[in-house]
Image (cartoon, rainbow, N blue to C red; front, side):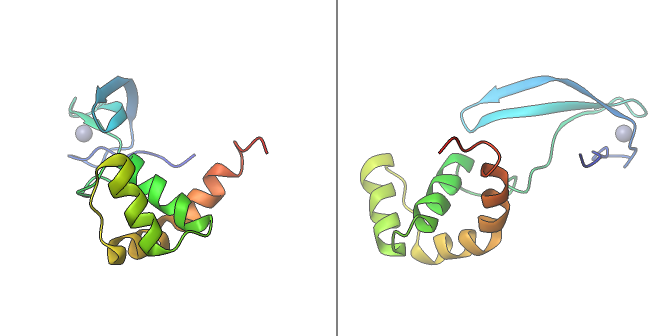
Length: 109
Ligand SMILES: [Zn+2]
């Protein structure tokens, strides 16, 4: 498990402090034992314009063999999200390997 550092003072002495629920999902909250600031775990999706679940969904569909065009079409038709094929392609390159290794542990089939 990687260590979390405080976003303000970079101290590694941080503790979990409950969870925050919002429309993009659940965020683990942390509190720094040094400066007492509370922050959410940075997960790499922070600056994304799109919801994490949409990104994960797009990557999975594309990895399952759907073309970029079909992935884009499906997301627009079923989830009302507009993502360019270029963006999907970039996500696949950026997060594809990470998601593959993360999901291989929980797959039941
Ligand atoms: Zn701190």
